[in-house]
Length: 177
Image (tube, rainbow, N blue to C red; front, side, top):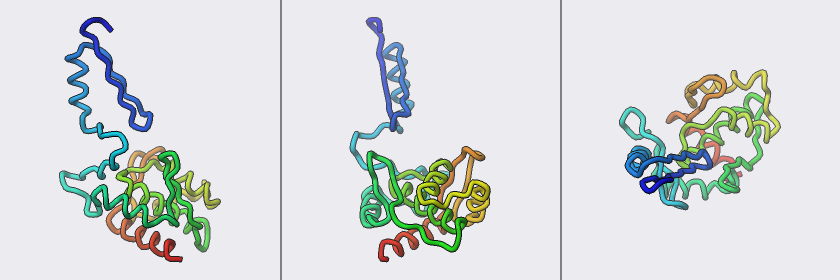
């Protein structure tokens, strides 16, 4: 960079945003993306507000962490990756896929992430031996009152308020078992 050059690098779990240019340009980019910045090792960012109002199931960061820690038979975090570690019981793969998805969505919500890639839901089902590629989309669509989707096949899913309540009840049931 020249005398007036500057560089700004932001890595949100290695999503990396790198800006180079004049100090003024870099300063404007930092200001524009300031909402993405948080202190390293700090609590997870709270879920995004929807329509200008906070989600009805939003927990403050300390409550999120506390809830996640009390569900230690359900979730584990290793190298910043959330895992569902409990057994998933159900009458068939469709029910197991729904339960595994609910739990993963809950775990991510408790970590401050509302929108979860559908591929993550597929992977948790694979991890638990209940993934059925031919029926996955139908199983997720059957959760209409619990989960909303966005973005098509490679899209995302997030819990609705009833979905959050159902997922929390399921997690507490598994934790108590």
